Length: 169
Image 1: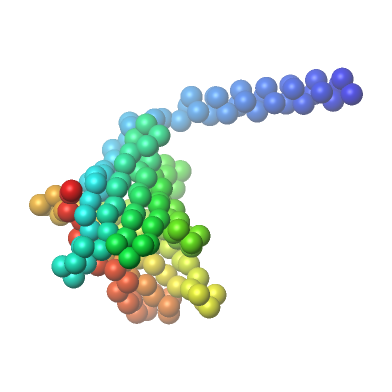
Image 2 (image 1 turned 90 degrees about the vertical axis):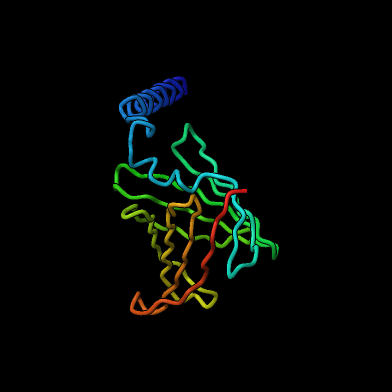
């Protein structure tokens, strides 16, 4: 038994040492311009749609500024949170969103021409696949527009799901 215990202890040391080496070799996200492309979304926001207040969204940098955490509270009682980060291995931004009732959306995309566009597939209430495309516009006046579209036909046609304007509180 002592040999197994010694072997497991040695294996644990090798794994921890290996993780330390990988961490030491990975550049800090703060060194990457791309990891800050979504910083325009950071803030404490009042969100309106069609001229009506629909919620509050607080976006904060966490984990040394490498991840943006979103905390949404809707006026209708909806709530959710997301983690947003630039993945240097894929060269894409990723968002993982979870609603209060456990529904999730995982989207990927990038920033160009003053907007962040993220897309991903989910399933609807019936189990049918649908595509989500969420575009965040970095407006010159400091507001952010979030425009969310959904497609149930593989992206041939799109339906508006949400069109909101973020104004700093």
